[in-house]
Image 1 (tube, rainbow, N blue to C red):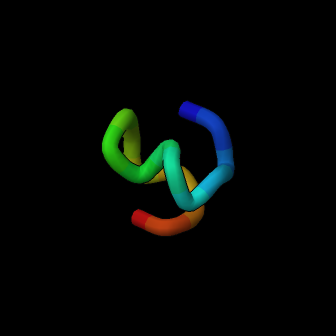
Image 2 (image 1 turned 180 degrees about the horizontal axis):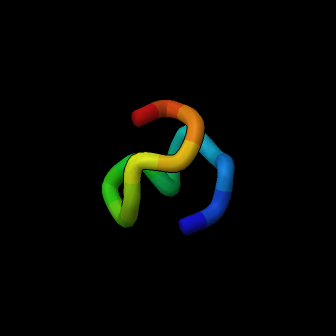
Length: 16
């Protein structure tokens, strides 16, 4: 959801 590296587990935001 959030454009963070840790958010990669939640949704493909920035880190993908």
